[in-house]
Image 1: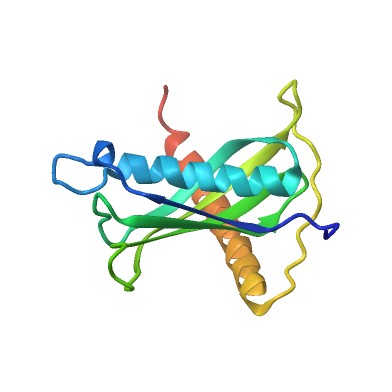
Image 2: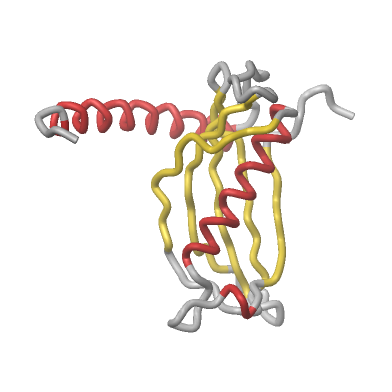
Length: 163
């Protein structure tokens, strides 16, 4: 067994009738819940700790998921901070009777490892060892820069308003 924890996980299951929305497709809220579960599983596996969701961003619903589809969520570690983990979650779906897989949704999440008192815990650094992992890491670093810029803009704009 490797001393380094796995940096990715895959979850697979069938979309159920209880997942449907009023339009007859899987409800976006259910997809968001699945994404959070996959991201949490990846983060908890990497950190060997309980983790809390600190950020969810850039969710893109590209194609619908049908009831009865085989759904696959792939969560991959992109970047680590001292206590945080950036996770990319890609969602694919397909009719189990067909071979064609559809890329349906993507999202980036940030989780923080915490102890029993809810205090952040240091985690093992992630060192990308493939070209794909290096690309994900560079993308995560760029998203950190953009989030900082957006946060500064929001503070400058909202600073003029009273709560």
